[in-house]
Amino acid sequence: MSAKILVVDDDSSIRLLVSDVLTDQGLSVTAATSGEEALAILEEESFELILLDIMMKGIDGLEVCRHIRDSVDCPILFLSAKDSVKDITGALDLGADDYLTKPFELEVLAARVQAHLRRQERILSSTAVSRGPIQIGEICLDMENVTVTRAGTPVSLSTRELELLHYLMTHAGQTLSRERIYRDVWQSEYGDMSAVAINIKNLRLKLDPEWRYIKTIWGQGYRFVTQSGLIEGE
Image (cartoon, rainbow, N blue to C red; front, side, top):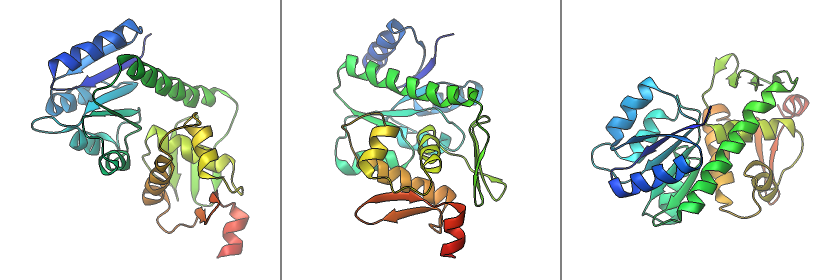
């Protein structure tokens, strides 16, 4: 079965072009003309990826993302004519997985979509490997059921945050540079390295507000401390 993609844009020409190129990639595309329509569709259907325009009348893309991010695990890619660092980091801060500025090449968009779908598939396929839940202190990551809890309380993470948490926990005790994290989690040598810090911040807000687990090693990177490290540091 082909992956289901939701395309949300109030510009009919962009909506049609994006839908056509993704359909040509063998993907199943549903289109929404507004934020309101997108929210209604998401009440009834689930998708493997959402392409979301920011500047729309009524409920804009940022508000849609803010509304759905805690309940939707699939990658969210923003499309926007806004290209300032503040706009991009603000969108990533809301939980977006990627950001593409208009105008864009359709081939680049298709490649980005396929890359996110492959990454999502790797996360899901990794659950087929015999690998039990990872428990460090109060935090438990269960990749088989794609769940995260702290002290037994469920915590909702985006796909990117889940993948980053898994990477940090499976490398617990190691100091990981921002460049290494980006290379291994984002699967790229080049890109906006600030995405690492933004997603680390989101993980801390949701899972570790006291900074007990995810430590910043100044000038070196980040470290997810082991349980023994927690005991020694208390």
